[in-house]
Length: 532
Image 1 (tube, helix red, strand yellow):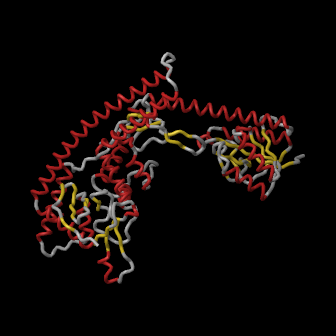
Image 2: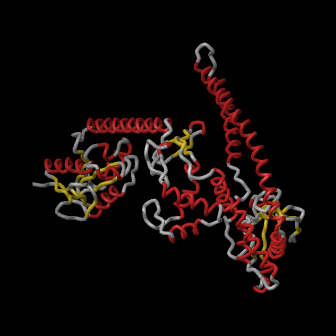
Image 3: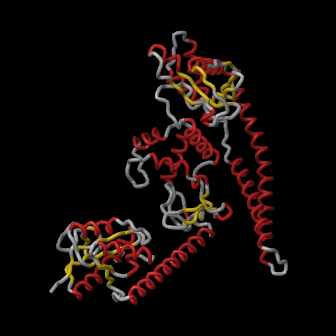
């Protein structure tokens, strides 16, 4: 005769483990335990007897609360549901397959047992045969401690295997990046997926070369019925952003960048501990760096979006501090005068070099006249393009010389680190730990600085358009010239904005009231602006 009501609680660490028969075997042992002790199974959550998956109540289901969460996590959905059912309906016993299914950590295990006990239920284990005497509690703690130790060893073995794989140059990670296939025979363990690779190239081209926004790219992909990673025709902006910022597409990925100190506490490792894995690149490095620069500029310049249209929003920079001017609108003015009170401003309180406000109408007129003057003269546009090309070649030559020097310095510093470690571990040299750490800290600092300079130089994108882009620019300039020749042509502010974006225009303002416009065309002649 049944004398107590019981529920079954079962757990695996991940969702993938729900389908490999671990849950059904746990539940079968718990059911057998309940039958041997005369317990009646109750509960308002059900799983299939064969698969262990959550189902509605049916002839092939059994009441059980199942979680696919880490044992280090105390807040688990099914565990919380069991506690709620205990308060609302009531039962006497919680049957768990083994002590590590409740928790491997002794403290977490004791905390959960006390939570059930405080509400009137006792936790029992199908495996273990623990009694209610102090000896039983000691055995529980010992078994939980060994379970925790075994789990730590398992994680260590797993991480060691992953590290070994990374050191062999093979990709280690979760989901395969869009555009690649997981195959150890390919370069870096990620051979290229031809169809998806074309989509990745299209996304980079649209954002970096055609000045599309991420939202516009999403619309373009969905209009073309291009499937996303999941195979569905819908694209999320986060997926597009992840593609645009993923270094895998320019040919490498890093492993061992962070270490997990606790369940959710990730700490970054030093760069010298990172393991670089070479992958077949899909994108040219210059295009990738151009995209990163545009994302950074967009984030900095448009952090506070203006509510009203501004022709030069996000395009104005200070010559002295290189920080952007913000669009400003004074709402306390009469409606008929508000247009005159649109402005761009610099403020010390926002980290800029001075307090300054510039009338928007006046500045926008001067910038547009300077750009229009440049577009009218075909030869000026072409000469500016060739001068920019020559300057880019010279800059790259200087950068290459600098990079060679920095790479040599990095190699020497790495060799010094190796020699220092050998000296420290050589018993004949007898270097003190204090001496070793002092020299090690300085060498690490120097190496970090050199690597930062290398990364800074390598990340500088080209400011010169490709030949195809320049031909498009020339054709566009011709259309603008034809319209300028028509005295009746009065471009809308939106049309002017499109012209400036196509030219990749930036407005540079100095403290003395002068300014210039730079872009793919070189730079315009200077102009003066009105300061408030």
